[in-house]
Length: 224
Image (tube, rainbow, N blue to C red):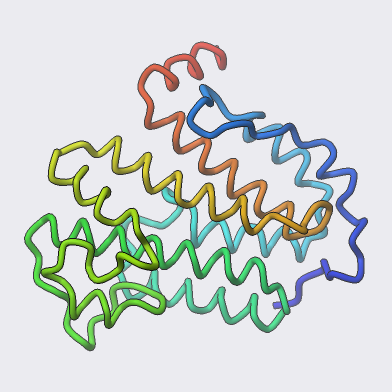
């Protein structure tokens, strides 16, 4: 795969970025800063290759983008293939963003599997991605999965599962992803990375307003 945007062309997307409204604070949002249709109109400014990249990234990391019939092995394979493409293209920040999101998803999957009473995945099982698979497997019966240092919020997430509070659980996870993208956006103002991170944050806002009942109703009324 060949991506059109490079760091030696930092002004290609100045007009696009300038046309995108500020996201604001995630959990104060009652609707996305612009509709998906309007966002798509802005994204038409992208080169075809860069738009392909954006679609690939969204297809791997967006919460509701993965096809329901996909196996764990297929999902993992897609993520690893995207990481290889980003690494080959020298898109280091986007590589880190995708790696972090896949690791976040792996931790969430482990917590939910354990909450459902499932045993630890076997050493040959293909179920997650990242640096912590072995640690999770070896600490399956430890409350924070042995991840208290890299993921200090895991204990709080387990509390939400114990209290049967999926909205609080999802809010916590969305907040971690939001903060990670905000940190990675530093130094990327008018480049491809800035565009992709903006869209990934748009996806998080969209996910949040759909989860929150009152906000979802407000959004529906606004669309009408």
